[in-house]
Length: 172
Image (cartoon, rainbow, N blue to C red; front, side):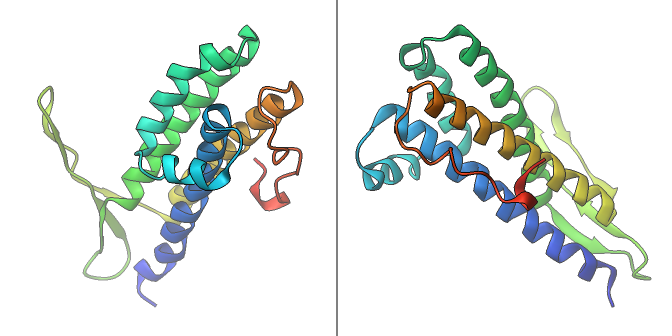
């Protein structure tokens, strides 16, 4: 068994877990903007990048959410989502290589910016490190879901989706 074979299912799980966050964010954002039609909500939300969805939610929240404590919770949740997105991107948009002897797996994720120039490089990544990313993404998804449930409970959104519990495997 190649050492990469242990990483592949975990990389896939990062993708699937993050899709849950994206869908939940779409539902919350759409419910605040367009209350009636799930198809319109989906058409609107899928056209935006994840970071743009967070920007839009942050921008409209003060107009749609009147309770200051909910706005504070949203700020905390958005920080978690931003970190989850960063971790997901680090895993998903990397090049993966096994060492020539198959004993280690390397992640190559260079990046560039005007401010810092070329950064990144090769780092050795264990399956446990990817599991930690998955756990963080699941925690962020749970925080977002609980925020949606609180919006429902207080009548800010009327979808009645968040009153359903997350599966046990999706809780943090």
